[in-house]
Length: 384
Ligand SMILES: Cc1cc2nc3c(=O)[nH]c(=O)nc-3n(C[C@H](O)[C@H](O)[C@H](O)COP(=O)(O)OP(=O)(O)OC[C@H]3O[C@@H](n4cnc5c(N)ncnc54)[C@H](O)[C@@H]3O)c2cc1C
Image (cartoon, rainbow, N blue to C red; front, top):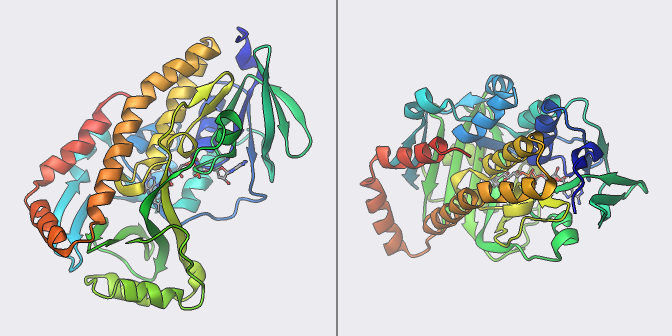
């Protein structure tokens, strides 16, 4: 059952990451009360760099944040794929998409967080707090928080990332699926790249570099590995350099600039492919619902689209069950497509057979830029 005034109860957002803060910003713009609980006790500067593709920036434009993000980031002209010797294989021409869809940008995650926090200003945020439990009673969600407070909400939104506790509370344990590869991310200082973004395909490994401006380069290094392989601080930088020793172009200079093991952020890469995404007064958004592999650079974009559609439907004043079923219908196909494409690209990029990699690279060389650019144009051109 869902009372007609369910929105008046307010919305609890669990997690103040990209999805949670963007949802708070969108709901605030519709005049709908919401509150965030965030597990971290302070807003520490997070992560390395991130690319916000044209569809992510379209959402940011609607949230009134595009201008501040563009000022903090770098507009990307192209994303090129090369081999490990930095020889071109294929490219997505982002400049060509600009007149129809606007810009794609790269920026530091801390700068993205700053803009989202500014957009969500005024929304109550309880730091160092999480959701302990919630139950559905007479159309309301009664939530018990870790600070001891118990409150009633119209909807509980799990925006608490890939290893979501909200998902577990609502649907029981689901096991994220391991990709077979692990990623180190870092921001290198004192180098200015001449181009926007490059991903280099080697054998069972890839290296990416993205210009962040002000002499900073966001790098990611991906290798096939079992999950949870230890990488102690001692020798961490040298191990990474050894792993990518055969990579040429800007890689040796970039890796030579690493000084502290703490500059490297490692994540084994997982995805969440199970459904459903909602029941009663619970809904999952972003990585909590459909964490995906980062091979299309679309995880945050999908999270932002999720919250834009959810806020739009909540703002329309529909009954809650209608909001959640319509939201799932609108999001499911598109998210699945991106998730599947990301997995396919990742698998091909991580091939470990040298012969197959040689053929892969020769085939990639013959793929016209217009084709890869067209894939992104089709994604950006479809209504969300
Ligand atoms: C290596 C890598 C590179 C990527 N590059 C890109 C890219 O270039 N472009 C792109 O679009 N996407 C990229 N992504 C994906 C993107 O980072 C995610 O899709 C995005 O961060 C998802 O946002 P989210 O808010 O759903 O989750 P998160 O960003 O993970 O935020 C979750 C928030 O919830 C909080 N939290 C967790 N548990 C609890 C709890 N129990 N209670 C309360 N709070 C909690 C966390 O502290 C955090 O603040 C990349 C991902 C990886 C791993």
